[in-house]
Image 1 (tube, rainbow, N blue to C red):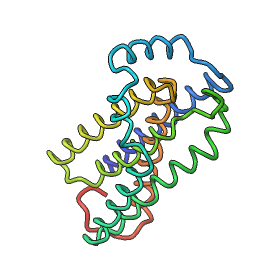
Image 2 (tube, rainbow, N blue to C red; image 1 turned 180 degrees about the vertical axis):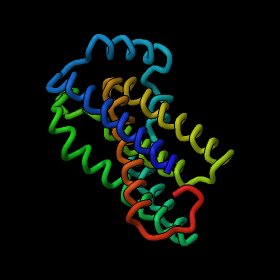
Image 3 (tube, rainbow, N blue to C red; image 1 turned 45 degrees about the vertical axis):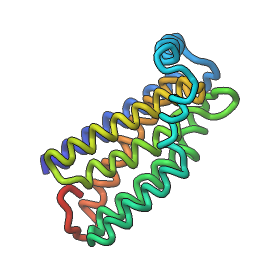
Length: 200
């Protein structure tokens, strides 16, 4: 029960951040002062060359989709039915809601395309969060969390330096991913099949 409360808190905070940033920048079509300042720092540190393209690669569909499928397959082999459902449902739901609900609702534009929240960020953070929940509690989970955070941070930095998104788009994407994954996990704990799992 205590774990469920903690997961719910993460989801609520994520939803609040997603909504507040979205409302603040709804309909905008240029970087805010905050976005511009952060972007200047990141561009000077990373640039927009080969390093940025390397950092953004994990968020590409050709990487994220096979990774999500692999996670589902591993869970199925291990008979972790609830884990397999989480790995399949959370990324699909997060990306679908982000693409067809949040982006049109907030209407923030970057170079003429809907930008908030960042879809690439949503996808990589969602998959990373799923892996964290599926990992063994203890050292393994902490290692997975650190690796996932580093990869997701790299993606976010690259999205900004390559001028695909504003920094606040990335922050909104992180927040929304951390809204969806906990809620799906809670729903599966309450209503999903029994699972042989250490975390979910």
